[in-house]
Image 1 (cartoon, rainbow, N blue to C red):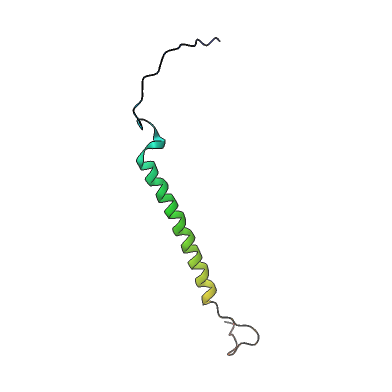
Image 2 (image 1 turned 60 degrees about the vertical axis):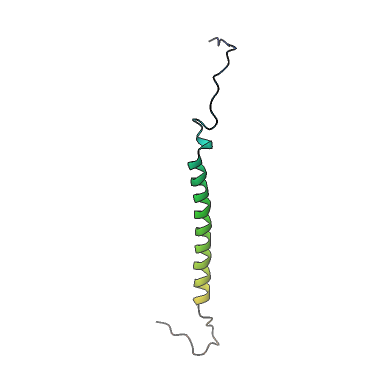
Length: 69
């Protein structure tokens, strides 16, 4: 198949018109994803720290000795 090339100019497009990557809503969604990722990391860290902090340091020399339920 042959392709015909024409030298016609395309009509000018207004800035940001029909371009999804320059939509202000996309920027807001991107910022929301970054904030969500930071919140998830912070809560995961707090959860892990809380589990480690709440664990009693019992061992064979602990007093009173740990009770197995």
